[in-house]
Image 1 (cartoon, rainbow, N blue to C red):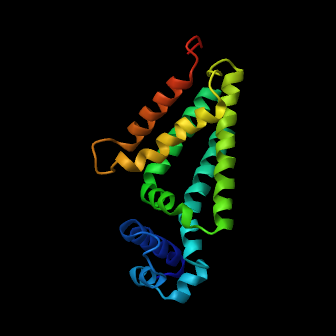
Image 2 (cartoon, rainbow, N blue to C red):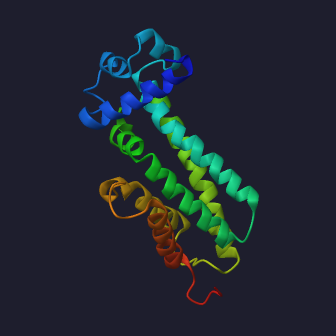
Image 3 (cartoon, rainbow, N blue to C red):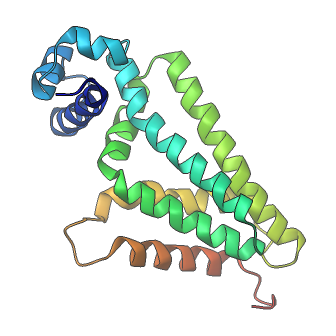
Length: 196
């Protein structure tokens, strides 16, 4: 096994074990045995089990933030940009659904500094997302009669609920699901008298 694959193998093993038996019930020994590595190899990449749990979600946060920045950088109308961002969040959340589900079930077990870091980074992402809606409100596209925070929460509640019903083995294609949820969200925040 190449050294560069160790972190990925450990992460994959941890996700599978955390999903099957829970974070608290999974030992570092079980993780390294499932990954086929030594504890020393694991500790080269992860300081602790807490660090590993944080790393699982950190990868998704980093990916989604990079995509958000790239989509905004490309430009376009606020409606086009927000639609592209929504679809990306949904597709990447489906791609990393097991990781997301494990993380949200175990979030309360993170150490206080890690919990604060996740909260900070998620808030930063949500703030950029909210700024897009705010721009649309200023342009008269999106409704302003509902607090901005509620509009943001409305979308992300759908994202976080995905793991409760979506199955990659099911008949729904991830892109179609992402587009349909996005269209429902955008329809719900669009002003009835806005030009489409």
